[in-house]
Image (cartoon, rainbow, N blue to C red):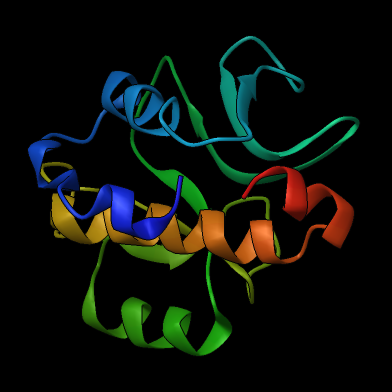
Length: 135
């Protein structure tokens, strides 16, 4: 699914584990699982044996979601929102931990845009052979 398919993602007014899983289930090439432990939900994009993480969060204690982000955009977001911090246990340059409303000051609409931004960045980094299967 492309970005145009998500132009009405405003129907997702609440950000929680269930709404995130419902949202990403609509995106081609996305898979979910628990490769690290029983509570860390990992969301990946890819095909065949090549998948890359674009989001992860604690499904039992939902407080934030780690999302990949353009480094310059990260700096701007961290300066504007208390709910956007350097990614916990991730590369601080390329990942943010985002706490959506009502946990923090990040509006739901912005959260969904950041989730799609993370997906797009990671998908773009996949090998051409894999990307072509996701079109």
